Length: 570
View 1 (cartoon, rainbow, N blue to C red):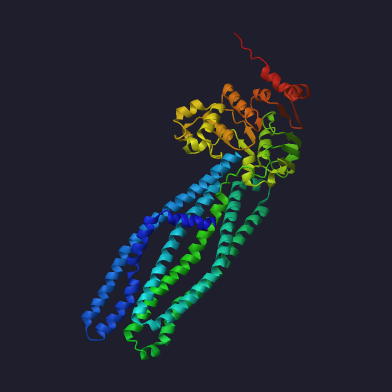
View 2: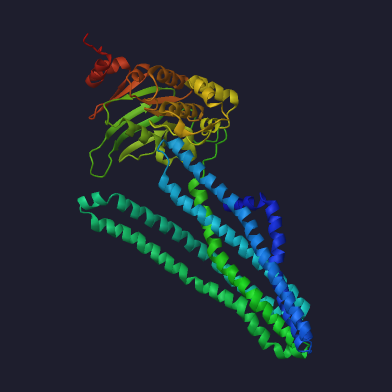
């Protein structure tokens, strides 16, 4: 249904160009009606009757029809482009929008490889859409011209032309589902092959160093072989297209020739027979061939490409109040979570148990590289643990669909993501249509009022390259503040702010309805938090600041170094 809606919307939004396309199609299709008429009359009324000038006049009329068709063809191409190019822009916005949404909600940054693959699908959809419009329109106008022309010559001939055409179309339509299935498999196989080859090239040094050449080559080879098998299966279906073209395009010629004696007895002239054959050979058969090729290849590619674009770039719709699977009170629980970056690597997180109640404010501290950001990525669902369970609202993170996960948590990483667009679009990207007063409240709470005024207000265009790291962090923090997520994860998301601005932002989130987890880069974040999770590489301890000072030597050491005065010599 989504694919059909996309196509219908692309046509419905360009009515003026569609009218122009139909108008010029009449001119382009002029030879479809004029060819048989001109040949029949040139023969019967001209050359066969001893009036060569009359025959030449009819042929001149046919030449004029072809000139009109040439002018019409140019205008038709321009009209098709006017419909297809906005369609391409719509698809690109959908792809980029979906990518931006995933980047903003996951904190993982944009997946440039996925964008490149989807951009290829967009270009494929654009080209296929234009080709389908061209061939379907040409076929319909050609069939109408041929039917009217044959009826004008001799109505008794029409069944000999139309019945085989209907049979050929039926054979072609019956083969379309199998073509669509194989074309879909081929696109997926191409993506898998591209991904496996890219991964192999990126890790070539590691593959060689580990002696894994044979294993990696076997994996890539399987993907290549699967793509080749799918391509061969799709190629075999061309036989169905050839059969439908033979039945619908060439069988009418044989039937007309076989019925010629009977038609002559009924009054058909040589011009009528030759004109009918001209209609079939010069108009109907080429139009059917273009339709079979265009829809059988480009039409199938169009549908499959749009399905891929819709599936992989869709943004989760905002859930209606009370419709999300998660309860309002989010409870985060980690049970025996272990994670390592690689099957043989030492665990970064080992057997971690943690419970964070709704409304809690937790700071995660520890030395650099100890795994603090890994904890945030695990909770956000970006990474999957080797063992153990992570539950939000009692539901395993892996079981939540994207819409529920996005409404349950938001992660702001150290390098905040801002996209080209208005400031308002950047701030409300994750929100459920907030009012301007709600935006004002969030902007004031996080501390970006001066920045919003300096940028020119919510309608001002934002160029990320012209913003400092701290300004991008303020925009991302306000975006997270406006989101419906009950769990906010700040992974050093204030590291580019000065201490006062950092304190204001964290206090804003602490006062916001929900749960806050801060990956601390300054120990002042731990002092502001209700509880502290101390990670020391062998175990993790959680408690209040006072409890951690008493129980954790590492925490005391970190606090002592932070609180020690810096002395300078005079």
